[in-house]
Length: 177
Image 1 (tube, rainbow, N blue to C red):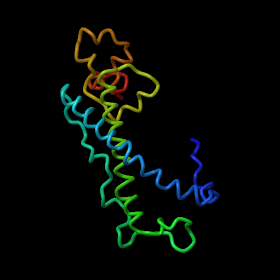
Image 2: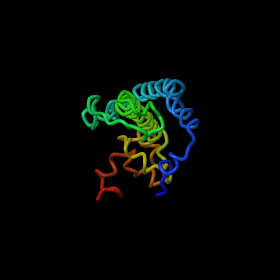
Image 3: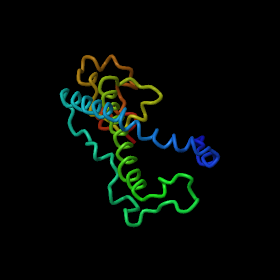
Image 4: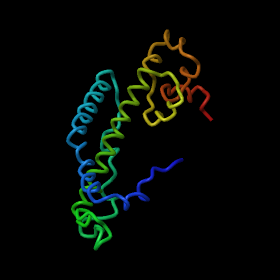
């Protein structure tokens, strides 16, 4: 896997780019997060209205607060000239980023993705080369599987996929070792 290159180039950036770049990470909090939250609420409502149950809650995607290594009193900070950005020398900056912004944002995006995968598995049980990544949002059966007269129309790989057909493993399907 190719790595994204950031650390090897960071210290070569001029001050003005760093100072202007820092706020750019927080602007999405104001511009996109409200829309993602609205989307999550609507998709969750959709799934509930069509009979969805046992859907993981958002908080399952947020890391436990006790799993964070540092608290305010022992939060490490950059000292001296190690950093050219004064804000990264404060504890509150790292606490905000590490305890709130990062875990809550990543969890929100992961939760939105999880819900959309459930929708995809329900309405569209047609295999493609990325569907293996939808297994973390497996469902009991798809819309097509809910109608026995329609399920016969599906390709065997779609009909017998355990991501959207829990009966496959029970009946000794292709993935039941």
